[in-house]
Length: 266
Length: 354
Image (cartoon, rainbow over all chains, first blue to last red; front, side):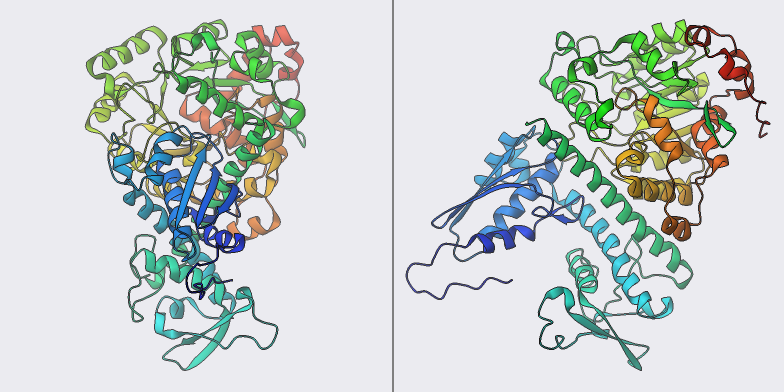
């Protein structure tokens, strides 16, 4: 899964397609919190020595320029983080603002340089979407803990240092999806083992949104970022579910539009 | 009216248009992109055998509209929601004036809404006066993402917008429909944002704020606002056609809406001609909530809820007396034209709810 720096001395070998795809897979549509590879936004990957070209089409020409921008620069940055890549060139197609975006991304401009009449930088939008993604991911993490038998009062008190990655399941269990994590609850008086993926996916966004910066921080929060009051656990959990329904609903729309567009051959 | 298990469900389509996107009317490339985008929505969520071709979709005209809405009594009444887009279309895309002709022809069947744009300042206030005087509009449709000159949009919680809401209050224009859904051209400005509804709704408790497209893709923000502001309603346009090809998703979204807002604050709308009530109403009314969702949310899509969502809730907002309408429709022009006299005469009138 992970890519390693080339240990060849002088001429690093070109990146593999798999390595490029793996990097692209980490780029999400910020509105849907799903990988742009899974969403089939990538039209083509071309590798020419140390140069990688990506062709990208979003579901509609109207897709927010800010979202399109984020995906394009994230794709560029992820690919360029491979030691074997010198330069990533991104071409966004069929977008109302493709000219501004392609120029900006490939000439390393900032969003406000690429869109001189934009009011704000794109970071505020990104932050808001990251926060929503965190809320949606929290639902899965908390659901996993509830299903493992933890009660709400315990869950709302959990901190990073209550979790320990368990030993990988023996022999066959090498895939990430089979990994488990141990939760030490109630002053470490007992532990339960749960699937690691939902917890880790949550932690990733909780860190990105600066809600969890040390292992001693309370992990689960209200959508506004506050610790959860025991009386509002159910409501907060429902809001997480709602955030998921919203994202997957929008995903359904985007997916449908993309198919309609492809069917018309445009 | 839709007949289901011996019950009659009176359908008020809360969101219809009569638009013109012919090439002669387009004077900005945004106009072409806009209709293409609408067409993508149409084909995405319309059964294959009911899809229109792009040319008929550009301009379908009043006769076809009346036929689609009323010929089979798919809808009993409909509310015009204008979309001006005068920067894209020479004569506008779907203006109150354009809608008014048909609405005047069948005043018992259509409700005609107006619009305002706070960026028009005093002229805009005068225009609102004019719409009130001329058409006695009971509501407005607002398009906060509309492009106007250099401006990329406006917000309902702007000071200028509040002036217009004051004016609505003064004129008795009570129903404020805001498009909060798929949008056009906001650059990095988040034009999907429904946050401005919150302040507007709490500042004007006498007005009703109908969030068209239930805020998608901001359903979460919308529902949260809806729990706090009792004068906020959700219009189902865009969500409704999920019933047809994404029934699980429809079940989930509807369950969320019924859980957060309750059955009195969800309103049906087709968004005609993006989707056509002649098939959509049946799809929505025959849809079921999944067993899992019914258990998870504890809500029902039963006949009482359907009656409210499909007609009674909107009727309350627009002071429409459904029983009186049924009487009228036993012999109005539409019923005569399509031979629906028996349809409205048959069966015992359902007892009034209140």
